[in-house]
Length: 457
Ligand code: NDP
Image (cartoon, rainbow, N blue to C red; front, side, top):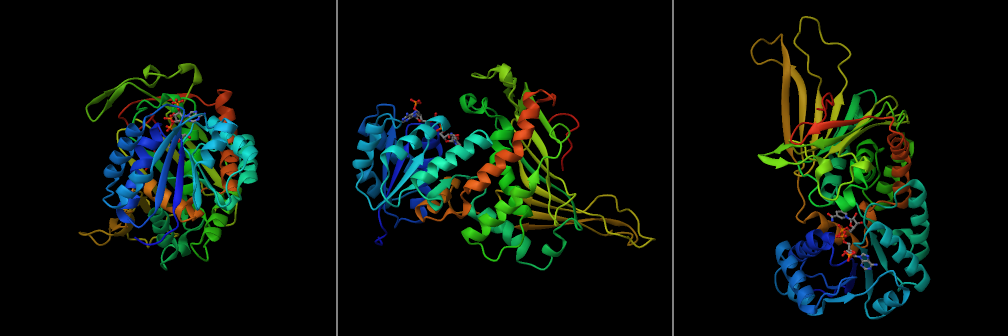
């Protein structure tokens, strides 16, 4: 083992869903590929959990992530669990005092409103120097609350030690996007309003509510996916050329795009829908409103689409359509770049009826370039040739990547405070229009392609 400084990962909300399903296995995958990491894991939650129970959870999750001895044994030898209310100053002070460490990461795997209360307590009691705060989405629930939370967390630690987690695009996917755009002579010269007619970012899932009504029914597809993740992807697609893939260059470029982005007419430029009973791969799915824990009166959408305008020289007039939905018939996690038609096709050539496009797939990462070329039979006819490429994937589970970046103190992929606020600013007019019921709620059967008439590529 190398002599890396030991880090203590204090997980608040350690008996919750995120910790069990994603965070602990994420540690496993991290240790599997980087066994030299020295990590102490301390779990804390309201629930009483005996030491054996906690050890069992950590052991199983490390195994699930693929961690082997001696890295897993080293974590198991020092991990412990503390029951208590993390919003209580004295309980939190005692918890922090019990952690002797060189470096402390506090991971908030808590309900969002509890995270805010714990941050308020941390401001009162203080944190050890060098502490990193890792905060899950949603970051606030409006522009105003995101601003307040930003102000609060940066009174506890400086911005560069606040990691607002966005696990959607891992490091590989971000670098793949940047390479595709900037590391060849083909893409960048046509990557603007002259070359591109429209951009779509699609995140269609076949998963249903899956017992997450407590969270999802209060949020819906726009808040859960578009506000947090798809706007980040859009920003990566639309950003100006960067000098380096360093944290400052990357996050400045993302912030610049988001500041220029807006939904011009929230009623015209947004759509929402909710799944009705249907069937996905032979599995019967109930109507969303009949799912356990759903309150139909909340009017929560399970599919959302917005059209975003980016008011700058590069993108004026090019719509960016962002869409995400649950319980659809097919998984589609991709961006589609629709190229403009050529200014003139030599007369005498015919048959060009499908616009050219670049499809960028996320996880597995790859692309398809659909290009008009001459037909294989009659050379006067035109048809499309599809060029396919595979791009490298991550070695770690998404939360392994998230944890690696936090432990390395690399906030490159964390959402910066200004970006978190901009994302709320962009979607708020839409949320307001939906609250006023100015946009009808469409319906689609589970397992379908979405509401009728919602054409996407
Ligand atoms: P859960 O409700 O499953 O877990 C939260 C845990 O926090 C519960 O065990 C809860 O205990 C505990 N808790 C509540 N109040 C306190 C307190 N005062 N002190 C200590 N512990 C407390 O939520 P999730 O794990 O699903 O989500 C956690 C965060 O992660 C949320 O911000 C969510 O949006 C985000 N997230 C979750 C994902 C997921 O797939 N689950 C995916 C991406 C993000 P009790 O149950 O007893 O109240």
